[in-house]
Length: 208
Image (cartoon, rainbow, N blue to C red; front, side):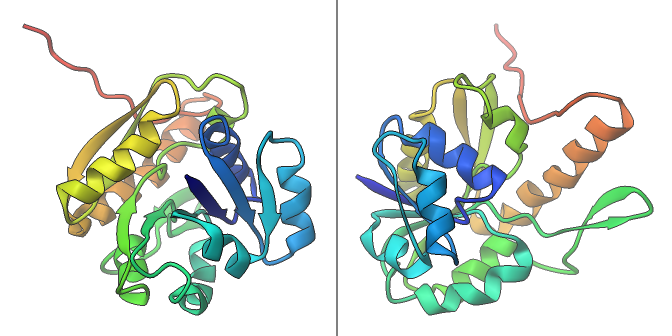
């Protein structure tokens, strides 16, 4: 199975791509194909292409791009029709030294679903800072998946679970994507305010 990571030459996209490339054929997509090829060169079995080329070849497409670039996605609608599309997009802004959620209403994932009406959209990887993906082994982390059907959830969950120590958790329909995305500025602020390198999501299960 082929997985495209659009925005895969950035720190977060490269981290996702590197870990998925252990189990999937990964295609890194960048607006500059030479950057995509360079990013893929250190990953076994990975390749690089422009956005359209990567999306056209893939069975699953992950968007790890700045929210400000979401308008470019419409050009890829034909390439990702009927495919599973995962949004790792977090709309954020920095105000008075704190990260804040940038949208008045809705979420990036819902906007992506409107732009790509024939794709199956889910959130994943939103709350994992790139620092957690630098090493060969990922620390235990919970990945929150919001999507409109359990079938799509199961497909996205299988992708997430292919990375050792990543646990997929169903967060509800895509209308809950805003809640998922809003956690990202929270964990970044918690890390900065408490002097830790990075924090992420890990929920504790009560036994008994």
